[in-house]
Image (cartoon, rainbow over all chains, first blue to last red; front, side):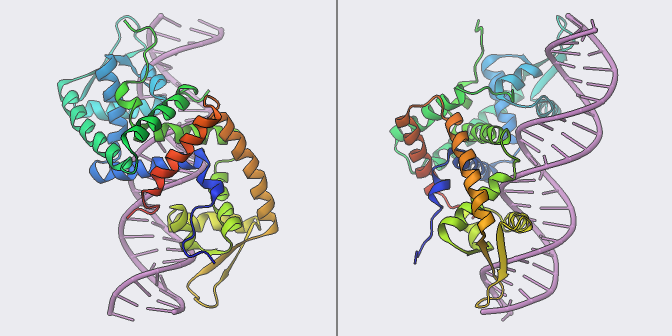
Length: 149
Length: 149
DNA sequence: CGCATATCAGGGCAACTGACATCG
DNA sequence: CCGATGTCAGTTTCCCTGATATGC
């Protein structure tokens, strides 16, 4: 008669299940500090800050986000003046998205919260284990395309 | 001038972001083989198969699922005769959920698909690395409550 | 013409909130 | 009375599909 039943081994050792749990856990920890949309905003702002102006399609391909999703995020960021959006004169189908000063400020704030969440999340791991985990996840993700197919 | 821009380092080394990517990647790979609800079904069936009959509340606490969510999953499984649901005579608030023979059959099928997805997912890792990843994720998850707060 | 880009409308899953009746 | 359980209704986020207009 088990006193404290644990998650069945079948699930505990399944990365797809672990990934889901870890994702909702991350979302929960982030949600305590910020509204949930901040995560998408953060991803886009980080990309623009580090790689410079991009089109929406490029952003989507890079981050594994849907075109529609990118559109929504960019619209939201634009309404807060954290990015600017103008049609590319060289290819008038494209929107060139550029981060603004306000966007960089927001990004800096979000970065601090992200670091705090990371610390909470990995509290049970040593420095070395945390680095291993990040590296292994990076390796797995690098092996798969960001976009559906 | 970078020819092939990669995901910014800020994101690449953020476990909360990696977790989200890995979760959608897993969901994508699973979705190629099965309808998406199969994941929730699998979790519940695995628990019932390994730990025996449980109440819906216990299932939720164990798996980190919402009460409402558990209700929906159990209703779906019941409609396919893969579990049975009856009120606990000892505590008539509770529903005792029990796996059926059909449920075990379904579970066996799902287990094979899950293993195949795991192999696809971790294709870039060696045996040793895969074990390390599973163990590290397990350690992180064990450090946090399955339920919100 | 085919193809890419951006946009809009909408579906589906999962997490969550709040409310409610029942029962211990 | 309080707390736990199951149920119902509804919100939000994100991933995805399909359709459309525009431009290369």
